[in-house]
Image 1 (cartoon, rainbow over the protein chains, first blue to last red):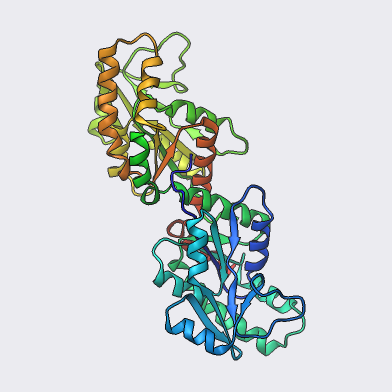
Image 2 (image 1 turned 120 degrees about the vertical axis):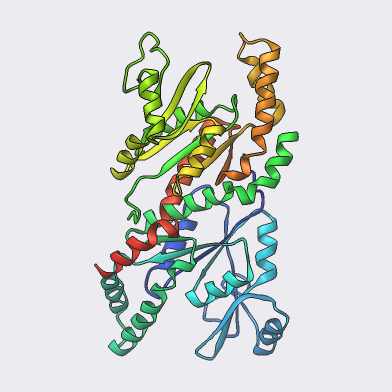
Length: 205
Length: 205
């Protein structure tokens, strides 16, 4: 019996290159899950094949900025001239429907969510070593050394923020990491602070 | 990769009749676990077939009391004229060897452990309802109504102590409860407070 009926907000985050996206996809391929992926809002143009409401909510800058003013985002950031953000109302709706909402976001965004919500679960995806991360960044191929070094320098700062997360999961093998995240989700549903109220009601039934 | 190499001390507890023993046995029947059961020390006489060092450590009262004086127990209690206790040194040894040590103990004992250790994981096993617990206590058969009512009254007080535990797991179906406990153990190994030191070392390797 699941004492906590509401869904959990799961924040999967970590430096660029640790494989957040791969872990997240492996998680969604697992059986019997109740996960939904939070669709971001962006001002960038849709790429060929991208579907509005599925890949992103595509909006113009004016709409995005109005949403910022009205505190409609759990987190947002501007990259290369475009806004990206997580709409709060869609997340709340899914949580109320008992879905586990997964955000796969940058460290900066995760810390914004940390400040805005009390009840989310924060998982830091770590590389097996700094060396491994540098190799992964290098293997992406098209990018030049200066850009790789810049990304790596950013990652080095982000490593020091791991202590702000609830869990640290090493992405040495993607299915292991996904399994561990699934265990975390199951366990978090049983945590006393989430279950104590329903537990008291249940006892009297 | 398991960032936390040390074993966890898992305290499975709850009122008499919730099925702690059944859940614990289901847990040990699962695959690929690394669990060991903590053998208690007692002053009661061995029953036919019971093996010293496996079912219990059988000792005389003088030895037990000396152990109490020397703070050798994680918890102990006296029932019907006999002492029962959890020897600290055996538990520490197993934890150091990376084993998950499972204690299946009464609520009173669990709260003693809570005071003595910082790093244990406390799981409260709850019945699906008070009514269900009363029925379970009644079905034990041989006992008279006065004794059942006494046990139930004790359980009612213990229900109110659930908030002192880290997790509440409902024993509505024994394998579900065992699965959830296994998820809790996996998740707890990834908690930041347990992993952060090894994480920092790992990054530099």
